Length: 465
Image (cartoon, rainbow, N blue to C red):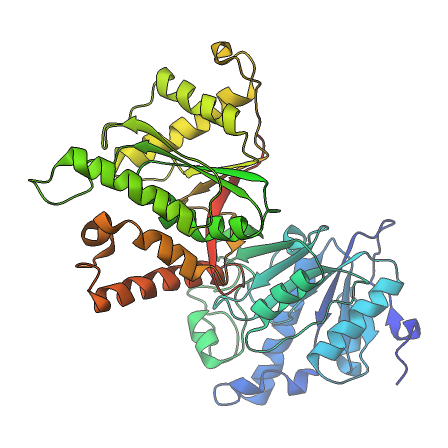
């Protein structure tokens, strides 16, 4: 079978400009959904495959949509639904998709959005059809890739199958593409197994139940996450207590330091409440925690400064004096990126975390504008980005694969906090040390799954500073 543009027929409508085309690979309906053979009869499996494909093709509009297939019946069905047809040369899903992308590249489309044909909740593919870098929508398990929007003509190698999400993210990074991951409830559900049918309220005939009409009413929830800033020349983390930086962005700092970034710490309080011992000498604890913080910075590879605002632990206040002090430090250190607590996190109990976040945000504004605190006698400074950690709605991730151990080492420099925050009895508690190491690595892995990497730290990025 030929594999040239002669095997392409255009969709019913094609825009004058061609920013993005949608490509839907569809196998022969009588061969589709064989993994449901123990649940559905052949006729019902074919009916389900057609229904799912129709939803995906409909969700592509108003973008031009093409079906890549080998089967004459599927080609006729695609024409009837207003889609263009690209004849696949065979060789499986990956070969079909790469062939389709190649054909659409010759047709002048700079981006191609590949969507699986079995997404029962699909409504609007244009919402994830990015025109910059690579965009991926993982399945609900964070394992497969339900939608992939990539630049045409860059030689992107598709690798569908178990674990495809992380492979596709890695391929985008290999090509130097910016990575955007969209977690969208209407696109994360695909129908492959009987468990998918049950979870989606689909009946034995392969159609939505009358009680739920499962597909159409599902509430759409989507979140977008971007991967990795360029390594900054200088970064400043503003945190409430000694050890907060290491807990929240320690691996990110270790990665940046390894690539030449100058790290700075600003700790807002003295850490004097950081003990469960009612008889401890708090002045000695303050001195100990300052030493520990500097050791932790060293463990991250810091070549910058560790500064202390000096507020009493638990008594940090939002006021003009504190804002001015932090703004002065920002103007002095001139960081490209500022990292801080997200002050808008709901139901935050500790006042220092809340107030440190607001102070950092207010100080960034004050530091950038010349009429705030002119008595500083310093030039204004506007950071390029601000990353808020502990956010409920993160939209940015830093791949910290390979820097997990550095984060743990830096945290273990805070020996005075073994009992209170790390649940380690002492330095000889081998089981406690191992459990803490495992806990940190699991947290980083969980955040990594959101963006398709082994380990990550996540943030809310403020861009318009």
